[in-house]
Image 1 (cartoon, helix red, strand yellow):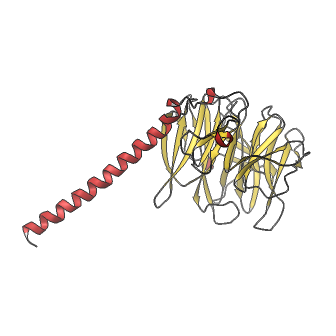
Image 2 (cartoon, one colour; image 1 turned 90 degrees about the horizontal axis):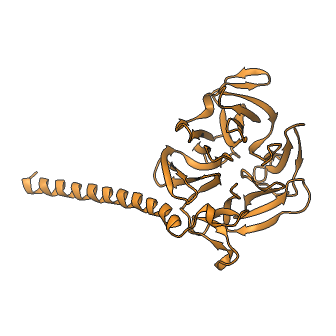
Image 3 (cartoon, one colour; image 1 turned 180 degrees about the vertical axis):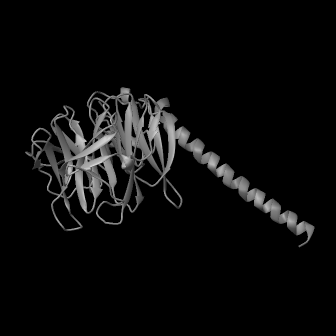
Length: 323
């Protein structure tokens, strides 16, 4: 190989490497600007009337809020997220990043939707929850697969305590009591965390040996126990007495679930008026209202099982009314 050709190859490599580096820097700057746009526009959680519904706008991928005075009845000026949740002084945004294998950015945001912290981890964004105080966060990603309706999926659920900065990368190793005994199995998966008001107790789904269970977890004692079966993606009510969840009611893989509400005192559940199959972690958008994403829109339904589903936002997902 001639010296001239060798230098040409080296120069070409450096140009390609420089281009890749520049792309990475621009992408990172774009993501930072993405969260800064909301703050510059005054598009924070404090800028909306109490009870305002927030969600992910499907058309833009941005965090949006309902605003009757805005075109289309919404403003979509927030950061781009695949999953979104907010409570107290904190918002949580999960962004799927391009590439193989799939990766997710976990963005911790303040009430102005400005980025405070970023965590990169493998997997596809799936569930996101912020405790009522805004101090404890949880998220679930698909490590394998992209649906709960198959046997070939694997999840990874993490918990971050903003008070201490302590990150539990995966809760799979939490000692689990199932049917009154310590349970050990290689197929244990957790997903869909929902926190109690004390920032210590939490509810989640555990799947193992072809069954799903509602578990009650304790962060301080680092323990979890199964309290009910066939409970997925629990969402604790504002008063801490009920859980909205999805229950498998059919072997039909195209429509296996129905939304229910569980009374924690009696462990008795009742179906909601939504009869379609919903694959979402529902959110309590009022003391007696449950909202969820289905068929490209956000719907609401009374939590007591009466009434009928009502479409509240077309082209939307990840509903939340920040407390």
